[in-house]
Image 1 (cartoon, rainbow, N blue to C red):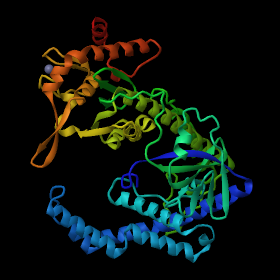
Image 2: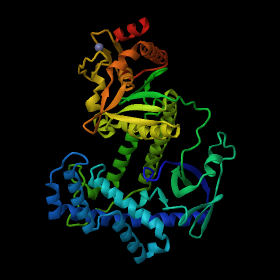
Image 3: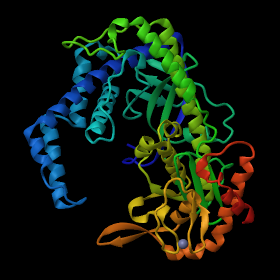
Image 4: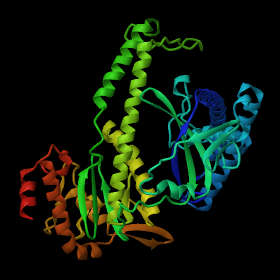
Length: 497
Ligand SMILES: [Zn+2]
């Protein structure tokens, strides 16, 4: 949405809700959940139907061709024709959602526009699965109700009116930030609202309601955060982030202040498993595995109060983790933008990252950080430029044009030509000197070794300083092995420089 209609940002305000209003909202969210499940079921059914059709098999066999080539266009057209015939389009799924709503009690709780938005949501989930950017979407069980509902525009359904939210017969007051220290709220409220989203959160066991105003344009830049107009570059590893610009460099643990809650999470998960087994012994085989449902009859599960308490605690832990992560991402993004608002970065598959390095990466969410950074850079008048690793190969390259493959365990770039630097910092430094060239109408990204060579004189002391900063902070506690500081040789080198 934001890509098509230009940039937008969110102002979130807590709602002041009476017990009655909270009940009405809950009823609408429950109606929304049931509608979502019904529509998702239909969308998945149509998707399966589509994939089984002969036309689909034929379209798959068509030649793929390069991006934007006539072959590729013909193939895409064939696929969308099939989708239209079967009714697997946003429009069709939306109208299915409307029919569903009008045919039952859900119509008493939801209006036309929020219904259509739910249709789109289910369709997009099914489409992500079709394009393999997501797994098969799951139905939302009762205890995992919708987290948010939104309108299509600010003209109908959920509407922001001066200082309150209107939704059907509800008129909800909000709690403004009285202090508004950086003037962010005042600034946002002067701009036109695109649409509103109502969000439900459970915080320490309490249900709280919020409204998110989606506003066109960029948020106010807080004056306490400096911006430098110019280039910077970052290199993100599974546990580190390195950033380099012409004037500054740093290397640190990626999201250092996000607490490690994995142990606590595992403990609760194990307790939940024990509780589930204890209260549902008939659902398990003798070897401890869960029984397969027989002849379409679903297994019946009993969840004890103890189990529900554990589940709530688990959810709370995940919420806390996400809150820490957001703060850390924001701080880091500000730091990078202060070094340069045009940020160069390798285009990485954070999914592959997660497969390789597991849960610790998921807790730090590098992909989410990149989104955050992109928004920050754009609102600071710059951008994030991501280039492919395939043609640039920064982790193997040296600005003397030597290309040598290093194992991941080798944390120092130590080239026979005399260049020696910590691997992540050096990668970020090279990213600063990546340029795009035109080659047969295609854009190709390459390392400009010439400019990297020229800049090295000035950059070498910056990288050295970044490393000694790391050593300084290392006195306060352990650092990841990926910094390469555990090698005595490396440490000597830092002291010398
Ligand atoms: Zn070299």
